[in-house]
Image 1 (cartoon, helix red, strand yellow):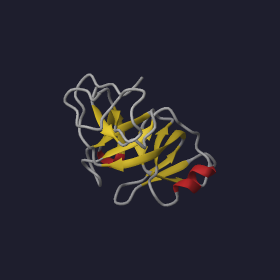
Image 2: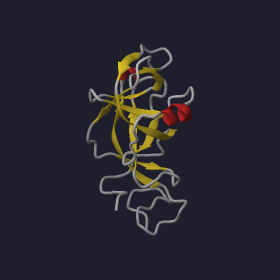
Image 3: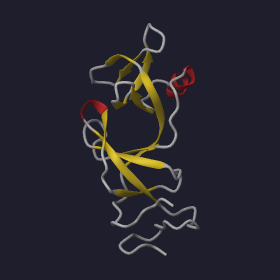
Length: 156
């Protein structure tokens, strides 16, 4: 049964149809210079059925994809490695958390020193000589389907 106020095909019950949209929590924003700012919003958006149950969204409020949502797995953080660099290629495919506590959406480049990296993005100033705590791969970038009404949890 669809929650009141939700379009057809939305369902947050454990036995929902595979094609039904999922309630994805919005946990922050991508702000100026592609930095991530985390905050408790209570907001939820409808995400595609292909997204895993631990997916979360960041609202892109500034920059190249303003108005879109960035989806990644909150529960899957991996250490920085050569494999991450290979999987990333020339794109910006990871959320990058630094030892300083800041988080960015940037392309990662190995610096000359071991375990030191540069974070790059076209048309933005590089963030150089940083140590990375963890990365999380971006699952999707998409225009949000719609905001869900309060009380729709999406998490069981």
